[in-house]
Image (cartoon, rainbow, N blue to C red; front, side, top):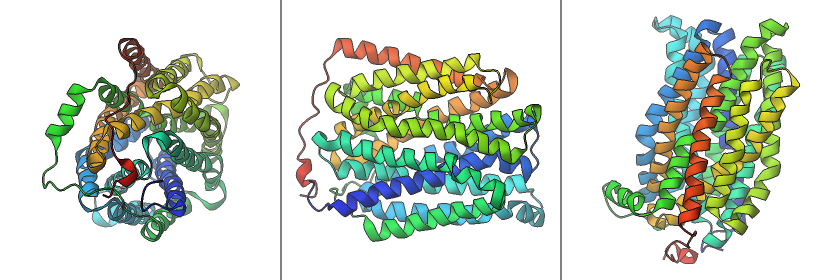
Length: 425
């Protein structure tokens, strides 16, 4: 056990991981139907507009996430997490009134929605990378896979809860009421983080962001390069599933005679199934990583994920049973593609620079998000709803091939020994 970390601190970390994912997933899941029903976005523009919202937020996240990691190294992760939750909560509180505020300001509701989504995204960009850094701070290398699996399990639980349960609420409470629930979740996260988390990592003393050291680490360690490439290719996976799967369901609803609210509920069940399978497989992935290594787990995860995404080519009707085959394959691989790269990055990062290196890792993931979501939006409109999934699957398969080559040319050595049991010394 790391000095200064109690069991209740780890438990608080797990709960906050779930709250953060509930917040992030709910806004992503409700966004398509909010734009469709409240702001009147048409089918012809749906793919591009929804993708543009995601891309705009990701561009700004990409610009600040590295610096937020540096701030967490300098001033503590808990402070950054609390303020991130608060910023996101205030923005979420304004969104249900975006149409009225837009009319009052003369700029349109969509503009206000864009702006508030940016602030929500910036807020969460201050939260979830620091939760990953805290997982590294709270663990030694020997137990890290287990703790990361626990954190990922709670994140998957949060996402599953959203799609399987909370996304049924619009049918009963209305879309705007559910938007207010999102703000409540963020306010609860800020309060709980302030009361229950603790900073234990050694503070970073330099007043400048150490980009040169990060570049040297990437140049000299192929494992770190693989982790960053994996972030580029696969960090968008769950966002892409949540956004384009829900879009597919919503805009196919008219063809099969469903209402928008029924489509949201049906899409939530499919995505909820993916989340449930991820929940079941996360402990298995934790064991696999500990037993066979980080790179082997990444390879297998990318294989399942890539095959699942490309199998969407054969899906015609998203309400047909055939969609469950690729969905299950994607779900099986998902935890491996998310867990292994983060564990590699945390293993290789000096404890005092963990925040900034994870920030750089997430910056690369943000670039990948922009590329895959933006291109996916155009593919959705141009060639069909399966386009974004096939594009993502091809990217994951290329990373799989690189990981296989890396397994052949080197063994997976231990990173330099670091006295993590006394990280505050």
